[in-house]
Amino acid sequence: MTLTRFITLEQRRFSGGGNLTNLLLGIQTMVKVVNNFVRAPGMAGLYGGAGSSNVTGDNQQKLDVMSNNVLINALRDTGEVALMVSEENDEPILVPEHPEAKYVIAFDPLDGSSNIDANVSIGTIFAIYRRTRFEGEKPDVSEILQRGSNLVAAGYAMYGSATVLVLSTGHGVNSFTLDDHIGEFILTHENLKIKEECNIYSINEGNSQYWDKPTADFVASCKAGSKPWSARYIGSMVSDIHRSLIKGGIFMYPADQKAKKGKLRLLYEVAPMSFIMEQAGGKASTGTQRVLDIQPTEIHERCPVFLGSAAAVAAVEKLYAAQSSPKP
Image 1 (tube, one colour):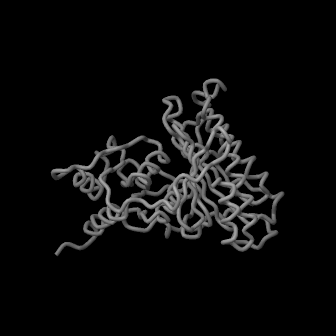
Image 2 (cartoon, one colour):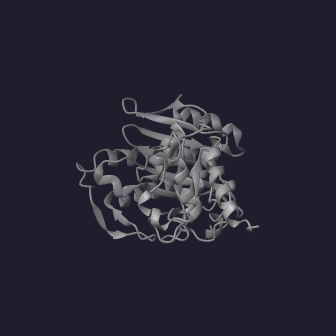
Image 3 (cartoon, rainbow, N blue to C red):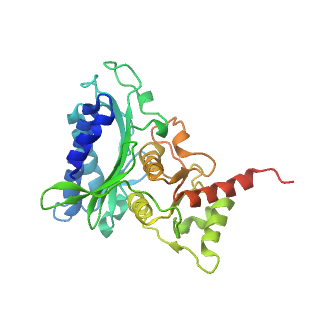
């Protein structure tokens, strides 16, 4: 089944589903365009930095800027988006020419872009919410500051040895692989479910001296015993989470002494990935709170996260609960 047909069939689950269909089809098109840029950055002169940084302090790559422009223009052209938030833009992007639009969207146009020159897998993440104001009114930033539990749809594209697009509209998770010969995404993993048991952990151990005790204790437990877990860390969130989703595992980017609120951004990284992980039967937590219950207050707000196989994330939460419990 092609992604186009899948999206068309899915619209029957929603009132006014045709609008979401148009938006998702627009996202499919923009992923194909970004994929073409990613596949041949050297040929297109897109390797290297752009000589600037974004609002969160990351050095922008040429492909960051190009991908961001592609997404903004493609989403605007769908006519279904009233407001956008991008990792690469300081302020929300209003789309006043479409006041009747039903949706707002947050996205990271090119996650893991520091790995571009090393030819490591990178990706695009998106999160779609229904507007909270009356249709026809001017969009307002408050409309994107919603809990992840309100997500209408979320997904990510990963540009690697194959280009995949993973999507959830709140009814499970499905993965599609781009067939370059016909130019279509084909359903290759239907109703994805993460493994309940896992023996793979993913974290940047270069930060271990800054970790809090629950994180350090959990990683130590992964290494202990006669069958220690395998450590796998790519440094591209999309790639690390995709591996966890397919093979089972836990991905961690905790708050620590260096990044007291964590490093990853809630709206367009942590929330959509947590939504997907829960839809696949996994769990997503800050260690003390379900991620999808967090009420954002800023568009570039950061958030610690542990997500993956449910039992592993529950083990982390148990360590945090023990730390906060009063000693007898």
